[in-house]
Length: 301
Ligand SMILES: NC(=O)c1ccc[n+]([C@@H]2O[C@H](COP(=O)([O-])OP(=O)(O)OC[C@H]3O[C@@H](n4cnc5c(N)ncnc54)[C@H](OP(=O)(O)O)[C@@H]3O)[C@@H](O)[C@H]2O)c1
Image (cartoon, rainbow, N blue to C red; front, top):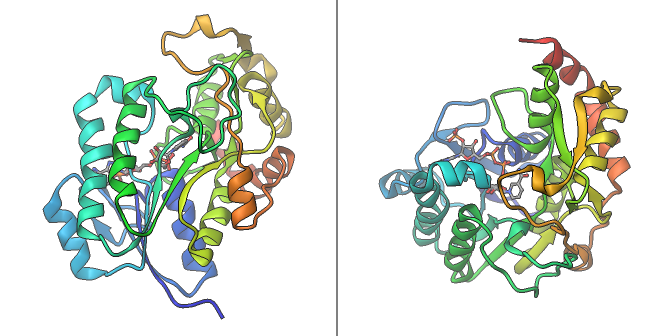
């Protein structure tokens, strides 16, 4: 019998926080408290984590065994545009949580973009460097998390999934938004990655909570794929018009991104243990859970 746990999830209006919160509430007997800055179906407690007083207020309602910290300003573009908000959200908020919940098991969402090597396929021992401001804030936040007695730092590849409850900017939603507004998605043929489906991330999180592992873990698909190929496959599975996608090279974009942004997820598979499904299996799961919702989304204005 799995021990009863108290779980605090930050960023429950976001892609990962929402799906995780929904799953844990439906499928486990764990007590779940969700927090975000705005109201939402999974939000129990509205709080701005950059404000210590808000984090202290959360502590009055829950003394969590586990914190899953997903709240962040996500992406290089957002962080270049709003550097101050990016810093307070990604670094100060993480520092506040680490200080106020110093005895909890802390699971932190960093990013695999911390690796910027010409060869890719990085494991957790690869050198890290900040290729942009977003990554810099994630690396700084990792330092606070590393000081916690019980912690896991996840370095995910791109996480994809469908969310219909509010505007969300994840990779897949950007693709759908472009198709919906009848524009063309320019996708690099020369940038490679290991995208992972949000529900697979949720499965991994459940296993982590159950197993109490510690340390840094990459999470991504075990297959390496170019962004162009990935988008093309998704469009094929959802029977979408391929005229909305065009393959380009990296020079087309102003924001610098690693061409070989690939990782090895061997360690998490070995330590949990857990077998990461294939990309086709992840697509089929996305298709079976979201096909109707995606069709409705594409014809909405
Ligand atoms: N999605 C990816 O492809 C990807 C890849 C690698 C790593 N990651 C990391 O994984 C984590 C989860 O990603 P995601 O895609 O689920 O992010 P997301 O959809 O952008 O959700 C993040 C949530 O954080 C909340 N938030 C922002 N500022 C806050 C603040 N000051 N106080 C409290 N909540 C705040 C926002 O909700 P409110 O507006 O309601 O507050 C937002 O919904 C992030 O840490 C991200 O850096 C994501």
